[in-house]
Every structure is written in structure tokens, then in C-alpha cells.
Image 1 (cartoon, rainbow, N blue to C red):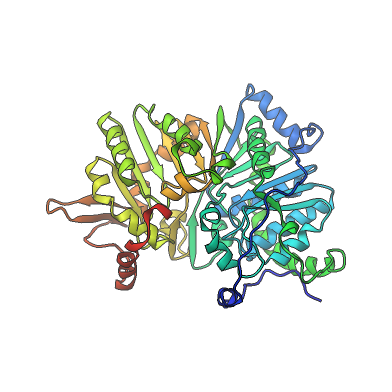
Image 2 (cartoon, rainbow, N blue to C red):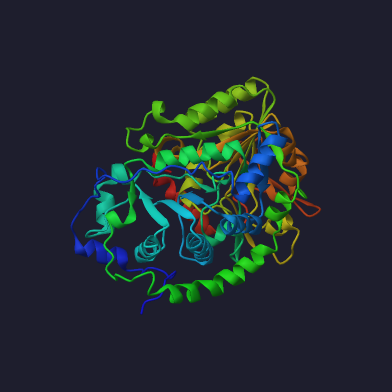
Length: 512
């Protein structure tokens, strides 16, 4: 009997697909049941907690930052364990690794208790095998829909290429909402690297826990995508060739997942953050907030500024800034328009700071290649430009046993030390023009102050300041311990990585 799998696909699947030939499409016109967030949640534990908090906060929402991976995973697992009526998840990708396994197990356990689970997942970068999702989808309380799927008939690769204009448009949103009362929104996908579960590398990422009315707004955004024509029930376009029955293999699934679940969950249990928040031992930050999100129709319309709803809404906020803009983004390709806009902010008297990955820390070399074209222009526009040190994980955690390699994945903007935008948006053409994105705009000076306070010292410890010298050459200025260092080429990189960055300049910027 085949057990529930979280292994890897054979490396040769692309070659096999190309040899198979053929081209097929998925129908987006078939009728499906429209469902919406459950609003009758007043009798649930989390519903009562959210209602009490909202009353104490004069009708405003409460927030708590999740900067540590174990806290972020622990919060999700604890919320799933506490769910009584519903769990709604919306993610760009899920990998067949430890994080994927424990999340899957948490969803199955919740569904066994009668909780309705709606799982909306983008297609292209998800690596969990289809038959594993089909198996979970058999649970009467779980429904999985894939957004804008590529047909599995014939060759997946050929189908993707043949429908590139459609298949290239992806849903990048990330949210986790329980009992329509509490949401987790931010930059993390469901994979080990986002939750500090990899031994050799760590992603610096960020989510925010959101309690109260804002969770209902996240649910409305989720419903809009869930009921969209491009959200296709997984069993509509994938044939279950193994035809395994969830009831029959339930024990095997439990055994396969529980060992991983108990090991990781036990570690995540060391984070008592959710319990402390509910017990009022840790105070929530409070303030008004908005969900800024693209309409899913963005992905079926031609690329046009009129359809870039999130970007247009956010620009309106940024243009009203009075003192300071701090951008934290793993992927930064400003383009000529972005450079000009930054120059305008600086000329208006604003301090503009951009923190992004270095060549050594990035996980997408082609994006870095495109970004590198604009470094001098950005610096000359008056922007303070910083790049993450790939070896700064130990300084970040204060732990000598921390992984050696660090990658920035946080996506956030701090405006005037008061507003925070936290979500899935990267500052590159793909996020702004091609994909769908979402996030929260939070008006909360005390929470913003956590990241503004001592920011210069933290930047010195974790990043290089990129400057242009009087010979118009770039320099990377860093502070490593008590030593000031100045590099005249991409720090912490070898010739091969620098060659790849040079060669990948051929990649079309509009697709990055």
C-alpha cells in the first residue's frame, strides 16, 4: 500500500514530459459551489477572544509581529489546533518537506474534529505530489483548489510553454485565517526555509498576527479568490491514478506524518506566544488597518496600470509620506520609473532607505542581475541602499550555532515611523505588474517603532551600505565586529557566482 508521500519528484519528469508531447488546457468555465467565510463564530474560543479584544480596543484590530520562524510555525499549528469551525489558507507554494508535512497533518486533525478547511494554492512552484493533495482532498471537510492550474494531460512543461501568457500570471498571496477571527499575513510560504527548519541556511522573513475586524477583511479577500473562475477544485483537472482511499490509508498517513509532526510541533510548542497573547500576558499592538489586495481579475486581464490595484493604492500612501520611507524587499528592480519616484521623494525632503539582498545572500541570481543595473541610479537619486550580509545570521540571532547563510525574504515598508505595510509584495515587475499580491497596511506607531528604533545599529551589523566613490565605482561598507570593512566587488562571492550574475543579465527584466 502506498503511504502519504512528501518525497521529491523524479528529476527526469521534465524530460519525460517533453518526449510525451501534446498540449492540453484546463477548463475555467465549469460550475463549482461558491462558499464564503463562516460568520457565526461568536461561540468559538477564538471568536470570543477576538470579540473581547475588539471591544477593549475600541473596535480596532490587534496585531503582533512574527519575526522568528518557530513562532510563525507555532502560531499556525496552535491556531489549527484551536480551530472549531473553519481554516482558510491561501499560499503561493507548498513544498513536500517537514513544514509541508506538519501543516498537512494539522489540517487533517482539524478536519477530523469537524472543522471546514478551504485550501487555495497556486500551482507552478508547489512541489507536493498531486496524488498527496488528492488524498487529502477526499476528506469530507477539506477542499483544495488550485489557482490558475496548468493541465496535467500530456506534458506539463509543454502545456505551460504553450499557454505561457496565461500560465505566467500567478497568485502570490499568503494568508492563514482561523474561525474568521485571527489571521496570519506576511511573506512566508509553506516550506522549511521560511520557518528556520533548514540547518545550513535561514530566511529572514516576517508575518503579522492580526486579530479582530481585520481578519474578516482578509476573509473577504480570500473569498474573492476562492470563488473566482481560476480557482479550480483539484479533482476537476487531475485524475487520481492511484485511486487510494483516505479511510483505508488513514493509519499509514497518520504514522507517516505524526513522527515528523510530533518532533517539529514539540519544538514549535516551545513558542508559547499564542497562549501568552490569549492570556493577556503579551499585549497586542493596536490600530486601524486595511487589506490592500489585487483583484484576481488582474491575472486574466492584459498587463496595465489600471489593474495594478495594490500598487496604485500603495503609491497613494507613499506619496503622502512626510519624513521617511524604509523599504525591505528581497527582490528590488525599480526600473526607470521607480528610480524617478525615489528621486522625487528625496527631493521632497524624505529619507528613503532600501534594504535588499546582496549577490551572496539572494536566492534568485537573475533578479540580482537586473537590480544591479539600477544601483548607481538609486544611489545618485539620494537613496540609502543596503544589502544583506550573507554571513550575518549569527549576529541576527545572537547564536553562534545559527546557520552560516542568510537570505532576506521579508517584504515590508515602514512609513514615517507610523505605518507598516506587510504582505507578499516584492518591489519588482513580476509582483507589481504580473502576479496578484496582498498585504496589510497598519497604522500603529508603537509597532513601527520596533523596527525604526536602533535601525542604524542593526543595519551596520547585518548589511553592507552600498556607496559610489569619487571614481564612480561601487563600494560595500560593512561593520564586522569592531572592524570596518570596505569591499570593491560583490562581498562574499566567488568568481562563479559573479559570472552567473553577469551572464543572467540576458534575462528579460519584465519577467523578474
